Image 1 (cartoon, rainbow, N blue to C red):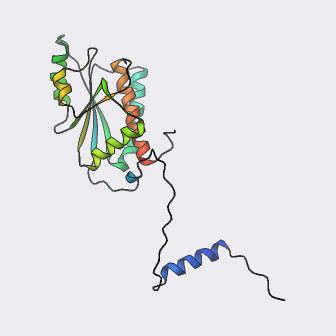
Image 2 (cartoon, one colour):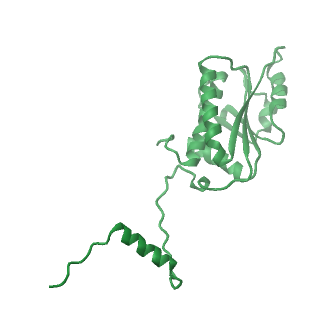
Image 3 (cartoon, one colour):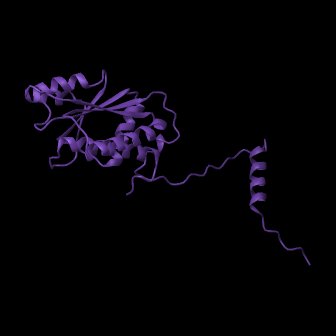
Length: 208
């Protein structure tokens, strides 16, 4: 009677694999990869980015204490922690206030001073482009990969953004056709920036 066939153990299988990989005569290596989620920028995972891309929100009006401020601070802190590994952030909020009532043109002057030097400029405007969260994440990561050091988002006041400043922007984003309070928009933007980092990192925060 022949001896019963032994069932390979996990240790035995691992030992066989390691022996095969260490064999100088082995010529073929099989690479196994799992399918990636279509909405995740897998190119950002594990990639070393030598240059940090800072994020700045330049906005009209002061976000003082209250639930909006608490929400903004929470998302900004989350982004700062999660974005380090992806060379994104920190998130800086620069607020301006025209106390003389000069309207959009006066606000544009103050906003221009708040925008970091050489920053890529994006505006938030109801006439802008509607983006999905994954598309937003991919656009931000593409800028970082192209070597941008700063990305600035401009949020206007109650009357919007002066046309001269709006024309300087390389891109404009819309959060929909509805008009949102400009103090709330910066909270929504901070959340979307944190979500963009989560999508790039492949975390479960963003679900589809």
